[in-house]
Amino acid sequence: VAGLPVPTELPPPALSFEFFPPRTETLEQQLWACVRRLEPLAPRFVSVTYGAGGSTQERTHATVARLVRETSLTPAAHLTCVGASRGEVDDVARRYWEAGVRHIVALRGDAPAGEAGYVPHPDGYAYAADLVAGLRRIGDFEISVAAYPETHPTASSPDTDLDNLKRKIDAGATRAITQYFFDTEVFLRFLDRAHAAGITVPIVPGILPVSNFTQVRKFSGMCGTTVPGWMGRLFEGLDDDPETRRMVAAALAAEQVRLLQANGVDEFHFYTLNRADLTYAIAHILGVRPQPGALP
Ligand code: FAD
Image 1 (cartoon, rainbow, N blue to C red):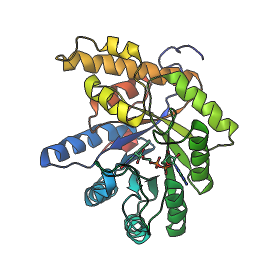
Image 2 (cartoon, rainbow, N blue to C red):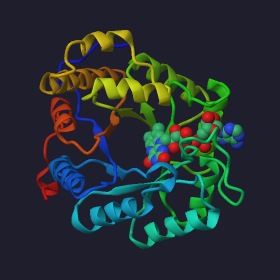
Image 3 (cartoon, protein in one colour):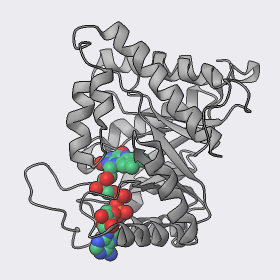
Image 4 (cartoon, rainbow, N blue to C red):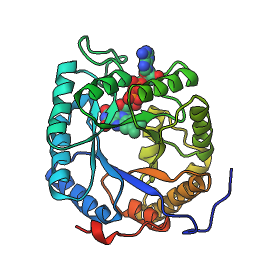
């Protein structure tokens, strides 16, 4: 593992940003302020999540459609296949195609809260690989899929999970975006394993700047991301000090990204949580500057 390079010594990386569809008027304003602040950084694409079980179908569509109409950004719509028939999922995908959306993040999704485990819909796409194949029949979409450097929580083994990623790529996915992780070596080892398995499409690390450590620790337990002990010590004593927490978070994420860059990674996907400040600061440290042509 190579050490940290001097900041700005390396060429600026390609970035993409993830947003979630807002639930209230206040959150809506927060999202669009975030979009406007990040737009001049000319990300490769911005993605909009799909609520658990497709619960935000209309809001995701409305947010993506507004991005198409009102910004210079290239949107990617997340789409899950849990709890829906193939026909229903295909209709959503066709609506995106007709609205000019050409990039889908294709996911399986999770069983609704309270249900024991995932059960495929009887007439649905069972897994993300099946969804990718279905999308291919609808349009010439760019398709991104999920990858798990620490293995998907319900996968029977790291190898079967990697086989699944390979199936998604073989079905037509053009990029994998990873679950967030904090141990950089875990990602680099995963990348080696993916390359050895013959995966050649870009595997873009998902970066989560940690502004609320308590929440992130809780959420990480559910999605299988290890929170190293040193992180707890880093955020110690800052529960009531959000301003210092944000500065620590920016330093931490910038360091993680620079370490990945030093090891040859040149594309990053940021989980923005609809807040621009951390992502903007980290992008700046990486040498990414507003592009005149991309100004709103
Ligand atoms: P799959 O690739 O289908 O894999 C799911 C599990 O099933 C894995 O354990 C896999 O190994 C196993 N598996 C696959 N095929 C088979 C088979 N044939 N037989 C048996 N087991 C199999 N969720 C949302 O609801 N909305 C979102 O917008 C969203 N965005 C996300 C974005 C990213 C970048 C990531 C990493 C995750 C996102 N998720 C989202 C979460 C995702 O829906 C869950 O992690 C879900 O549990 C798995 O989805 P997948 O697409 O990885 O599933």
